[in-house]
Amino acid sequence: MLGDMAECVFCAIVAGEGAADVVLDTDDFVAFLDRRPVFKGHVLLVPRRHVATLPDLPAELGGGFLAASQRLATAMVEGLGAQGSFVAMNNVVSQSVPHLHLHVVPRTKGDGLRGFFWPRTRYAEGESGQYAARLRASLE
View 1: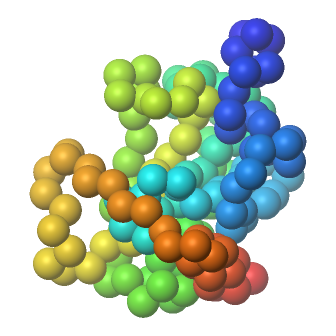
View 2 (view 1 turned 180 degrees about the vertical axis):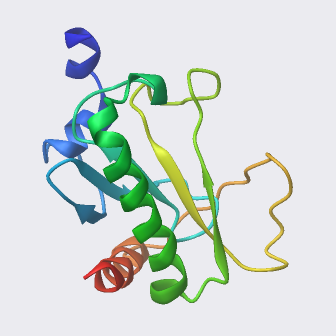
View 3 (view 1 turned 90 degrees about the vertical axis):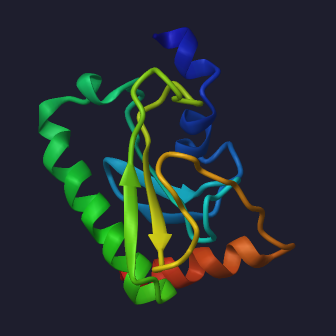
């Protein structure tokens, strides 16, 4: 596992060594904007501790992980004006980074998201920082 941590992009973000628009930073968890969002404001929630999948998450972190995801889902509505959110996680299959991460995606009726096909978009120059600031303000 140590080798995995040395090369883990999410561990680098948690350590402050990787670039990310951080929206939530606690003792146990960090949430930041996905670089290739399904919709703008799409956040990834990760534990600070390197764990690969949900079954690897220590039980003592489970409640905090759920609480942080609830805060992020609320911020989608309050900070971005979304009508709701889509919350999802992959374990091993389709998990692009082998570090546990929960997707919290802002949703609006008629936004075009269908099933498990996740089209991706991009932020314009400087736009991701604006989305991150709006979410951070909602989380305060």
